Amino acid sequence: MTKELTDRRVEVAYFYRTKWGHHDEFLELFTRNHLPVLAEQVKSGRMLDVRVQVPRFHGDGRADWDVLVTIAYRDWAAIEEHSDREIILRLFPDQVRYGQEERRRFTILDGHWDVPLDSLPG
Image 1 (cartoon, rainbow, N blue to C red):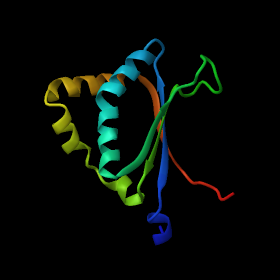
Image 2: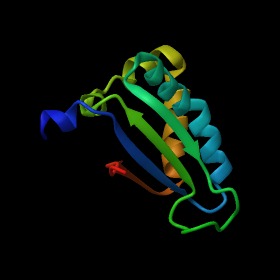
Image 3: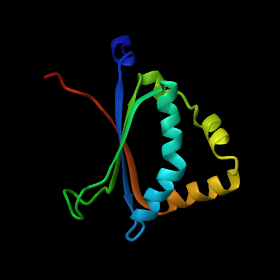
Image 4: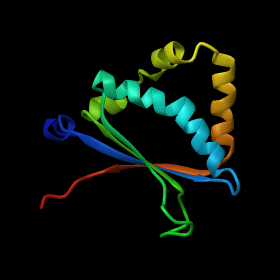
């Protein structure tokens, strides 16, 4: 990658498809255990913005995702930083419970994929 590409903001869309009947549980676990970690990453400057979105109506658009998280990273190096562990240890002293809930969060997923995005001029 050229320096021009690595020194600029990078957006990534994270798509989640939950198993039938587990959408609310996934959102509850995501909000309790993962969103605070992302908020800390924004405070640190690693991430510039985090948005969590769900379709307004059941059946809107394609049925291959039901939670969309868009993260704007400071630059490509910020994506490669893996500083979550320190934050997780600080925010969640009950690591056993945290681990169980995070395993559950991923168990109730049907699919998950990440899409780095390029913005077109205009």
